Length: 47
Image 1 (cartoon, one colour):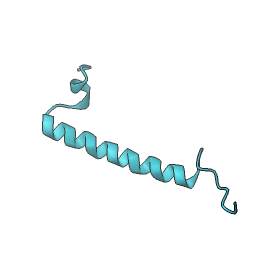
Image 2: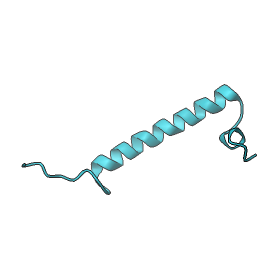
Image 3: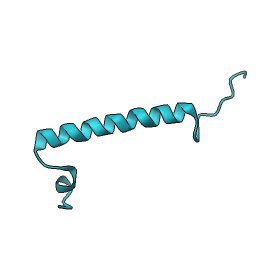
Image 4: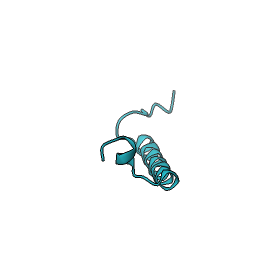
């Protein structure tokens, strides 16, 4: 029980994973736009 560091809230662990998932989402969004030829807003019917 030496390592009782929390994994919730604004911790280095949480912010690292938040950044990684944000980068992954951005790349997936760009790839989807390249494959379909339309932007995300037009894909969900807002434009």
